[in-house]
Image 1: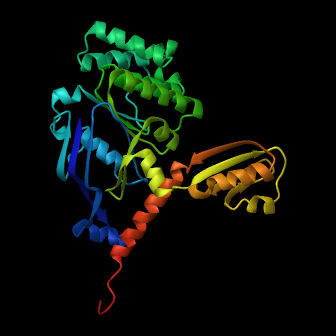
Image 2: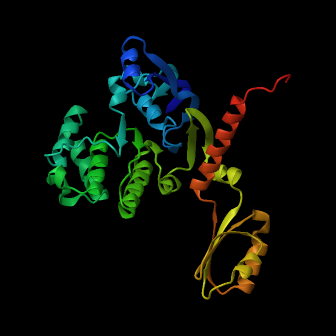
Image 3: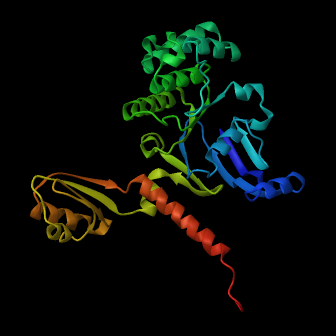
Length: 338
């Protein structure tokens, strides 16, 4: 469905020091540096996959999605979506993909979303009967009700996001690029969007690529993740394998029926992450898990406990820290005589 080989996007960025003199000099002699937004990445995505595309701010995630959607031309390398080269913007490709971003909207501000839906129907030349069936399904699944008849400016952020999703899907795209679709939404609306995206993928077989800084989105939707950092690929594989390989320890949370002293908690033999009168959170090596649980149940008033993998935020922080250390090591000058 999607094939990427040695994909690069480099920008020439103007640089100058602050001050009037530097500004005047830059009129005649500009200095530029090359910024590698995407710096030679490779991956393949099969039909129907839900893939998380992760990385810190400025890693190149949105740039990559825009190249795959045909909005940016790569500096070098190859990209193929549905057998088409995105930068050529073939009509058949554009009818089969959609890029949805939580920071920009296609809804017309003073008109109801229904007008945008009808506009998209005309743009994508969707037969009216098919459009009606699709829109009825989307209105039902997203619980849009009477929202589509209200002016967009009267809708809440969450309501607008649901209408954005509906507008993006009226032509039934085979590939869906989602760039921060839940940004700014409350937890209830985030969960609604996640449920809908998963159900849509399972019902239609559409391929979904998701970028998000909300790790709940990724955990709920993406069995596979691709991680980039400074434009380079850091990981491509199963999410659970990334967690196990980076943070193999478990996070144990104990809910207490009676307060436990610091010495009682320390005696469990695990790293203490949090401790108050009602809760204890521990970081436990897998080999020590059964022993820590046994000691905790025997010595503390435990009302409830959960055992989970390390939070994805911590896993990614470790992965990015490791990348920074490797880049720093490569940048260090060789010692004299080495």
